[in-house]
Length: 171
Image (cartoon, rainbow, N blue to C red; front, top):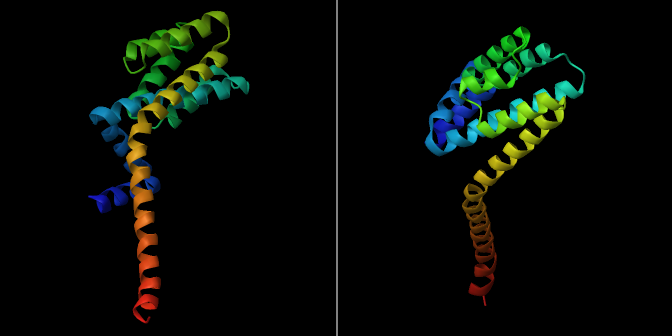
């Protein structure tokens, strides 16, 4: 299984179509999919905020963000939101209608639109969902870290054994 995952990751890093399929599959996995959705929202908000603060027009920003998000459903939702912006509807409405973006993010984005501080609010959204992803991944990292430390101690113990045992056997 580990080899299959390594091959899949390698293919995903080399071939964009495979990466897209991996993202599609990851979103369907129960716990991991929830984390990936938060990651997509954080990526969307951070990139859009950065582009807005850099002075890139909103329609161009949405086009760039749609290509960078990395998931077909989110790309479609962002393109629909872009069309809504072009028609004067705003950003929050079409994103809410997609059902892919969390209610909290939609409300914060709507407040940013109304106050004219969309870029600052998008950064807050990105920070919030990045923290959510970090908190969700922390429990999974602790056993991994313990396993690595245990393995390192085992290797060091074996090295010491193989160095000291010939010395002690000759005495």
